[in-house]
Amino acid sequence: MGGSRLPRRADGAGGDVLRRTGVHPVIPPDTTADAAGAYAPAALAFEQVTFGYQRIPVLRDVNLRIHAGEFVAIVGPNGSGKSTLVKLGLGLMRPTHGTVRLFGTPVDQVEEWWRVGYVPQRAMADAALPISVEEVVRSGLVARLGLLRRMNRAQRERVEHAIDVMGIAPLRKQAVNRLSGGQQQRVLIARALVTDPELLVLDEPTTGVDTDARRILRESLEHLITHERVAIAYISHEPEGFVGIAHRIVEMRAGRPVERSHADADIVAMAHRIDEGREAEPPPVEGGADEPR
Ligand SMILES: Nc1ncnc2c1ncn2[C@@H]1O[C@H](COP(=O)(O)OP(=O)(O)O)[C@@H](O)[C@H]1O
Ligand SMILES: [Mg+2]
Image (tube, rainbow, N blue to C red; front, side, top):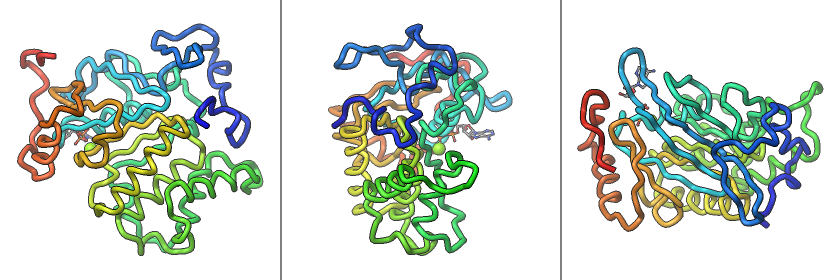
């Protein structure tokens, strides 16, 4: 397993986004050679991206790439711009300067949104309706259902696969609003997986989640990167969710992602400091000297 993802694609539509958007076959600037020597663009690429809300600068000249099968953990204090970064990555906001690309295509030209799975921060906070786990997972297919609004066999299989991968089969008939925080997060991730995404963006999925659920989540993500070559952008304050499995750890500092190493013990300490709320204020972005790299 773990080779090309395209044959497994449920609807047979994978791989033609570049042809459709006319980018293919020019090799985009952000390319990497995989084991077979073929060139593929990064799943997600930020190129000199600057962004601010109104007049408040948040991100400054950000360059970051996440490739297929790569797990990138994004850490940093509250307010340091982590959620803003991923929202720009998903085209939910436009950068002031610079370019965001998904699979090599500028984000505002992307049409095949099922290639991306997104679990926003505190996504389930308002869950009040007694909808079943199965229904929530299936709702991830809404954009993909045809005129008759019925799942085809491949889509049903994707729902089953997502439920299995996230280990929520025993919960399938239960109402999501009766589940624990950790179970709800797994349901939301399963929903994000039903379109067979090549990029999965998780914004603080372990907040308010118990240790057992964190371990299960971690194992599921490990499966996705190794066996399904999903690219994962994972925002978290909790190091046990990513230390040991993340390929890269970046810390948002003064509006930029700064690469950190696993061996860097203080990354763990830093994350704990954040957890304890001792580092609530972001560092200033504007006016200050450049961060030493
Ligand atoms: N919609 C918004 N309007 C104005 N300012 C915002 C908005 N969203 C976030 N901010 C500000 O932008 C900064 C970065 O926020 P955010 O990306 O949510 O940080 P993080 O996810 O790292 O906690 C913070 O100072 C926050 O107050
Ligand atoms: Mg956030």
